[in-house]
Length: 638
Image (cartoon, rainbow, N blue to C red; front, side):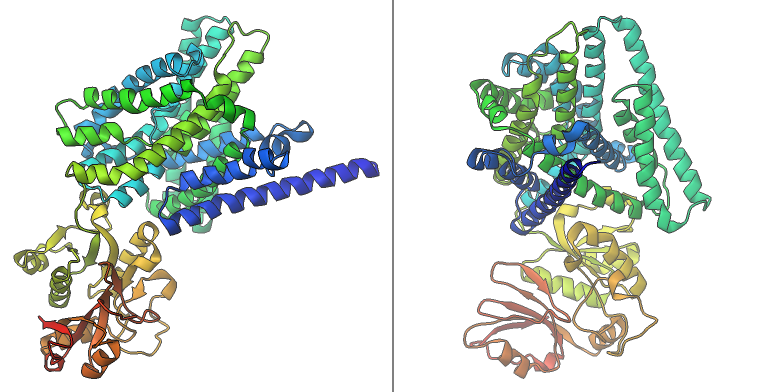
């Protein structure tokens, strides 16, 4: 290699490294900003990709990030394999949460929406893509199949944001989980049929081969799942290798299925994930967490790559009256008709109205659409193709337009519409209190008095009786069980407190809910009734944040409760601040404070009360200390 070739190779390597670093920074950065401002992450990721791609090109003449050039330059064709593998892992992760018992529990409406509404939406979407968007029949059929998906990665944040729970929230959640792989399967089937017709092969003969290939893909996915389950149960693999083995086996499963028939790999990895999900494999929660982390990285990266790969010319071609007509048809005709016909007689009118409007598309729709758009374009360029796919180049911008419009419109309207239809919770999310005892019951009643709705959870019916008699919301069952994933309304709380006498159990509960709520939203009582560090205690990294203070454990709280200590609610004013409270009640433990906006903040080590006018302090102390004059503070002892 001469000096010039070496310099060019080095320059290309540096460009590739910079592109990978930029993609990672933009993708994860957009996810973090979305979390901070409570905005749809998918919109921010798309904006980030557009900013360094087509918009940068318009301003500076060439894009800062050009995935086509970086990954396909120098004779390498890496972009499509990268996107294909990422989509495979994303679909596996979607299949990993698809349990048949949950589909059964989700109700008749979800089953009918999947088995009747899915094909109906596919057919109506094909007509919209053909006559409104102007695509050819082949591209329209493939594209409409992909748009059946809604996607849990988009639905779940909207449900939390809108406080939508109950049956309506369960419907949207499970429709997204089930339809995620179903839409991809529709697209695979449609593409294979079109490819056969385009090349002049026998449709019946090739159709039978596709069915056989799909069956082989399902069988291959099942075989991989069964093999992994057996290997893990028999102890043939160490714990630290389980997650890497899963990741490597996904790629192998996908590659082997692709050797049987193109795009059957998507079927195989989905079946693989579903096999693991229904295997009752011990430790699957930890593996699922790893897969979710990988999926977040891939979703972020793929979305930035796909948006940055758009050109100003493609965007200009997408901004047409045909695109607007297509979006209007999908929003106001295809989705409402599909829901109303498929769920007729199973949903109330207000539920059908909301579900007929809410259907945001996510990363799977864009990634799979872009993948099949490229395949259709390749098919059109072949000399042996009998068809010209006049709309294949429009699929990707149409998919992005669909994602942008549905995420933005549905994100901003789901809350007001749910409230207008009487389906949203009128109160803010409360707190799940795990472990029922006299002290926790009195704390729950105190929180309820200040407008915070607690849910008392315990797996002992007798212990729950005083909570039921007090009129508190209760959940009977094990919050760590799979049953609780369905029966416990997760939209009803955004904080969890472990208050049982069993400190390891409290830590287990905290670890269970931390990935969903954030570790800063899970709490538990101190491990022991002493300030001294106990090397035998559970490590801080595997437990929730300490409630009240270190050394204030279960035994001491129960003892003081029986000694007559009570809970107090103290509203601070300009004349009576937190310093005055501490002077009046030096022995009282501060448990939480209610901010003027109604938000609940639990207190503990490194989380001192801020105080301020309008803040209500929740405390626990000797009853005789509650003697603050009424004109200085509003104090009520329970």
